[in-house]
Length: 250
Image (tube, rainbow, N blue to C red):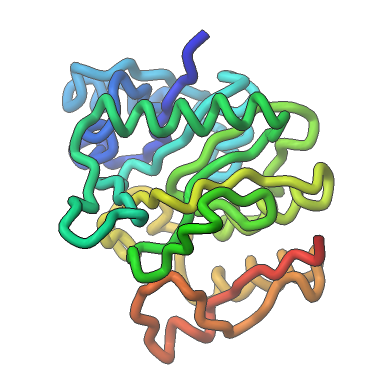
Protein backbone atom coordinates (compact mmCIF):
# COMPACT_ATOMS: atom_id res chain seq x y z
CA UNK A 1 0.00 0.00 0.00
CA UNK A 2 1.48 3.41 -0.96
CA UNK A 3 2.31 5.86 1.79
CA UNK A 4 -0.46 8.34 2.56
CA UNK A 5 0.63 11.99 2.43
CA UNK A 6 -1.72 13.82 4.79
CA UNK A 7 -2.12 17.56 5.35
CA UNK A 8 -3.59 18.38 8.77
CA UNK A 9 -5.47 21.67 8.54
CA UNK A 10 -7.74 23.87 10.62
CA UNK A 11 -9.81 26.79 9.32
CA UNK A 12 -7.51 27.38 6.36
CA UNK A 13 -9.66 25.90 3.62
CA UNK A 14 -8.59 28.60 1.16
CA UNK A 15 -4.88 28.44 2.06
CA UNK A 16 -3.79 24.80 1.83
CA UNK A 17 -0.50 25.53 0.08
CA UNK A 18 0.96 22.06 0.66
CA UNK A 19 -1.48 20.43 -1.77
CA UNK A 20 0.42 22.10 -4.61
CA UNK A 21 3.78 20.40 -4.02
CA UNK A 22 2.88 16.67 -3.82
CA UNK A 23 0.75 14.17 -5.74
CA UNK A 24 -2.64 13.07 -4.36
CA UNK A 25 -2.48 14.48 -0.82
CA UNK A 26 -5.23 13.90 1.73
CA UNK A 27 -6.45 16.86 3.78
CA UNK A 28 -7.46 15.97 7.34
CA UNK A 29 -9.91 18.33 9.07
CA UNK A 30 -12.63 18.44 11.70
CA UNK A 31 -16.01 17.05 10.61
CA UNK A 32 -17.69 20.46 10.91
CA UNK A 33 -15.21 21.99 8.42
CA UNK A 34 -15.58 19.31 5.73
CA UNK A 35 -17.97 21.27 3.51
CA UNK A 36 -15.74 24.33 3.30
CA UNK A 37 -12.62 22.26 2.57
CA UNK A 38 -14.44 20.33 -0.17
CA UNK A 39 -15.60 23.60 -1.71
CA UNK A 40 -12.11 25.09 -1.90
CA UNK A 41 -10.16 21.86 -2.52
CA UNK A 42 -12.25 19.72 -4.90
CA UNK A 43 -9.14 18.00 -6.26
CA UNK A 44 -8.20 16.54 -2.85
CA UNK A 45 -9.59 13.71 -0.75
CA UNK A 46 -10.91 15.06 2.57
CA UNK A 47 -10.73 12.83 5.64
CA UNK A 48 -12.47 14.07 8.78
CA UNK A 49 -11.99 13.48 12.47
CA UNK A 50 -14.52 14.16 15.27
CA UNK A 51 -14.91 17.79 16.31
CA UNK A 52 -13.85 16.94 19.85
CA UNK A 53 -10.32 16.26 18.56
CA UNK A 54 -9.10 19.82 19.15
CA UNK A 55 -5.60 21.05 18.45
CA UNK A 56 -2.74 19.79 16.29
CA UNK A 57 -1.30 17.33 18.81
CA UNK A 58 -4.56 15.42 19.45
CA UNK A 59 -5.04 15.51 15.66
CA UNK A 60 -1.62 13.90 15.12
CA UNK A 61 -2.48 11.15 17.63
CA UNK A 62 -5.77 10.55 15.81
CA UNK A 63 -4.18 10.54 12.36
CA UNK A 64 -1.39 8.16 13.36
CA UNK A 65 -3.89 5.60 14.61
CA UNK A 66 -6.31 6.15 11.73
CA UNK A 67 -3.82 5.94 8.85
CA UNK A 68 -1.17 3.74 10.48
CA UNK A 69 1.66 4.85 8.19
CA UNK A 70 1.62 8.38 6.84
CA UNK A 71 3.69 11.45 6.03
CA UNK A 72 2.37 14.74 7.42
CA UNK A 73 2.83 18.09 5.69
CA UNK A 74 1.62 21.25 7.43
CA UNK A 75 -0.87 23.17 5.30
CA UNK A 76 1.43 26.22 5.10
CA UNK A 77 4.32 24.29 3.52
CA UNK A 78 4.86 25.73 0.06
CA UNK A 79 8.24 24.49 -1.18
CA UNK A 80 10.74 21.64 -1.02
CA UNK A 81 14.39 22.70 -1.08
CA UNK A 82 17.40 20.63 -2.11
CA UNK A 83 20.23 21.65 0.22
CA UNK A 84 22.82 19.42 -1.46
CA UNK A 85 22.64 21.47 -4.67
CA UNK A 86 25.96 22.45 -6.21
CA UNK A 87 26.54 26.05 -7.39
CA UNK A 88 24.32 26.75 -10.36
CA UNK A 89 21.92 23.90 -9.60
CA UNK A 90 18.34 24.75 -8.69
CA UNK A 91 17.58 24.46 -4.99
CA UNK A 92 13.77 24.38 -5.15
CA UNK A 93 12.20 21.09 -6.27
CA UNK A 94 9.11 22.12 -8.25
CA UNK A 95 8.12 18.76 -9.74
CA UNK A 96 5.28 17.32 -7.62
CA UNK A 97 6.09 13.76 -8.66
CA UNK A 98 9.72 14.20 -7.63
CA UNK A 99 8.82 15.64 -4.22
CA UNK A 100 6.42 12.72 -3.69
CA UNK A 101 9.17 10.29 -4.69
CA UNK A 102 11.63 11.91 -2.24
CA UNK A 103 9.13 11.37 0.58
CA UNK A 104 8.43 7.78 -0.43
CA UNK A 105 12.11 6.90 -0.73
CA UNK A 106 12.68 8.07 2.84
CA UNK A 107 9.66 6.04 3.95
CA UNK A 108 11.08 2.92 2.24
CA UNK A 109 14.36 3.44 4.09
CA UNK A 110 12.49 3.88 7.38
CA UNK A 111 10.76 0.54 6.76
CA UNK A 112 14.09 -1.12 5.96
CA UNK A 113 15.69 0.23 9.15
CA UNK A 114 12.54 -0.33 11.23
CA UNK A 115 12.35 3.36 12.18
CA UNK A 116 8.97 4.70 13.27
CA UNK A 117 9.56 8.47 12.96
CA UNK A 118 11.22 9.90 9.86
CA UNK A 119 11.49 13.34 8.32
CA UNK A 120 13.62 16.14 6.97
CA UNK A 121 15.94 18.80 8.32
CA UNK A 122 14.93 22.24 9.59
CA UNK A 123 18.00 23.80 7.97
CA UNK A 124 17.15 26.05 5.04
CA UNK A 125 20.48 26.99 3.47
CA UNK A 126 22.85 24.88 1.34
CA UNK A 127 25.63 26.52 3.38
CA UNK A 128 24.49 24.38 6.32
CA UNK A 129 24.67 21.09 4.38
CA UNK A 130 27.40 18.56 5.22
CA UNK A 131 27.91 16.31 2.21
CA UNK A 132 29.47 13.49 4.22
CA UNK A 133 26.47 13.28 6.57
CA UNK A 134 23.28 13.36 4.51
CA UNK A 135 21.32 10.87 6.63
CA UNK A 136 21.06 10.70 10.39
CA UNK A 137 19.59 8.44 13.06
CA UNK A 138 20.54 10.82 15.85
CA UNK A 139 18.97 14.18 14.94
CA UNK A 140 15.43 15.42 15.35
CA UNK A 141 12.86 15.94 12.63
CA UNK A 142 11.18 19.26 11.90
CA UNK A 143 7.51 19.65 12.72
CA UNK A 144 6.21 20.83 9.35
CA UNK A 145 7.19 17.71 7.41
CA UNK A 146 7.59 14.28 8.94
CA UNK A 147 6.16 10.80 8.85
CA UNK A 148 5.34 8.02 11.28
CA UNK A 149 4.85 4.29 11.17
CA UNK A 150 2.46 3.88 14.04
CA UNK A 151 3.21 1.61 16.98
CA UNK A 152 2.73 1.96 20.75
CA UNK A 153 5.70 4.35 20.98
CA UNK A 154 4.33 6.85 18.46
CA UNK A 155 2.59 9.14 20.92
CA UNK A 156 2.36 12.89 21.41
CA UNK A 157 1.78 14.32 24.87
CA UNK A 158 -1.53 16.17 24.68
CA UNK A 159 -0.57 18.42 27.59
CA UNK A 160 1.44 20.26 24.95
CA UNK A 161 -0.06 22.67 22.44
CA UNK A 162 3.23 23.57 20.71
CA UNK A 163 6.70 22.11 20.08
CA UNK A 164 5.35 18.65 19.29
CA UNK A 165 8.30 17.95 16.93
CA UNK A 166 10.66 18.23 19.90
CA UNK A 167 8.43 15.92 21.92
CA UNK A 168 8.15 13.13 19.34
CA UNK A 169 11.87 13.29 18.47
CA UNK A 170 12.90 13.04 22.12
CA UNK A 171 10.30 10.43 22.99
CA UNK A 172 11.25 8.14 20.11
CA UNK A 173 14.95 8.56 20.83
CA UNK A 174 14.24 7.54 24.42
CA UNK A 175 12.03 4.60 23.46
CA UNK A 176 13.72 3.29 20.31
CA UNK A 177 17.04 5.15 20.10
CA UNK A 178 16.55 6.21 16.48
CA UNK A 179 14.86 8.89 14.41
CA UNK A 180 15.58 8.98 10.67
CA UNK A 181 16.34 12.41 9.20
CA UNK A 182 17.22 13.19 5.59
CA UNK A 183 19.49 16.23 5.70
CA UNK A 184 19.50 16.81 1.95
CA UNK A 185 16.01 18.30 1.82
CA UNK A 186 13.94 20.77 3.79
CA UNK A 187 10.37 22.02 3.47
CA UNK A 188 9.63 25.73 3.71
CA UNK A 189 6.56 27.27 5.34
CA UNK A 190 4.69 30.49 4.80
CA UNK A 191 4.99 32.98 7.64
CA UNK A 192 1.93 32.01 9.69
CA UNK A 193 3.08 32.73 13.25
CA UNK A 194 0.16 35.10 13.76
CA UNK A 195 -1.97 34.03 10.81
CA UNK A 196 -5.60 33.06 11.30
CA UNK A 197 -6.32 29.36 11.59
CA UNK A 198 -3.83 26.60 12.36
CA UNK A 199 -2.15 27.05 15.75
CA UNK A 200 -2.64 30.83 15.90
CA UNK A 201 -5.31 30.43 18.59
CA UNK A 202 -2.77 28.75 20.89
CA UNK A 203 0.56 30.31 19.95
CA UNK A 204 1.79 33.05 22.24
CA UNK A 205 4.89 33.64 24.32
CA UNK A 206 3.51 32.26 27.56
CA UNK A 207 2.30 29.09 25.87
CA UNK A 208 5.69 28.71 24.19
CA UNK A 209 7.39 29.02 27.59
CA UNK A 210 5.00 26.53 29.24
CA UNK A 211 5.54 23.92 26.53
CA UNK A 212 9.32 24.34 26.61
CA UNK A 213 9.38 23.87 30.38
CA UNK A 214 7.17 20.78 30.14
CA UNK A 215 9.43 19.21 27.51
CA UNK A 216 12.52 20.00 29.57
CA UNK A 217 10.87 18.52 32.66
CA UNK A 218 10.50 15.24 30.77
CA UNK A 219 13.81 15.14 28.91
CA UNK A 220 16.15 17.14 31.12
CA UNK A 221 19.51 18.41 29.89
CA UNK A 222 18.90 17.10 26.38
CA UNK A 223 16.74 20.21 25.93
CA UNK A 224 18.94 23.30 25.70
CA UNK A 225 17.36 26.66 26.44
CA UNK A 226 17.93 29.98 24.68
CA UNK A 227 20.30 28.51 22.11
CA UNK A 228 20.25 29.76 18.53
CA UNK A 229 19.79 26.73 16.28
CA UNK A 230 22.15 26.39 13.33
CA UNK A 231 19.52 26.36 10.60
CA UNK A 232 20.45 29.50 8.70
CA UNK A 233 17.52 31.59 9.92
CA UNK A 234 17.83 35.06 11.35
CA UNK A 235 16.87 35.04 15.05
CA UNK A 236 15.83 38.13 16.94
CA UNK A 237 16.54 38.72 20.62
CA UNK A 238 12.87 38.18 21.44
CA UNK A 239 12.77 34.86 19.55
CA UNK A 240 15.91 33.53 21.26
CA UNK A 241 14.16 33.64 24.66
CA UNK A 242 11.70 31.04 23.39
CA UNK A 243 14.14 29.02 21.31
CA UNK A 244 15.33 25.54 22.26
CA UNK A 245 17.61 22.97 20.71
CA UNK A 246 18.19 19.28 21.37
CA UNK A 247 21.42 17.43 22.14
CA UNK A 248 20.73 13.71 22.37
CA UNK A 249 23.17 11.77 24.61
CA UNK A 250 23.02 8.73 22.31
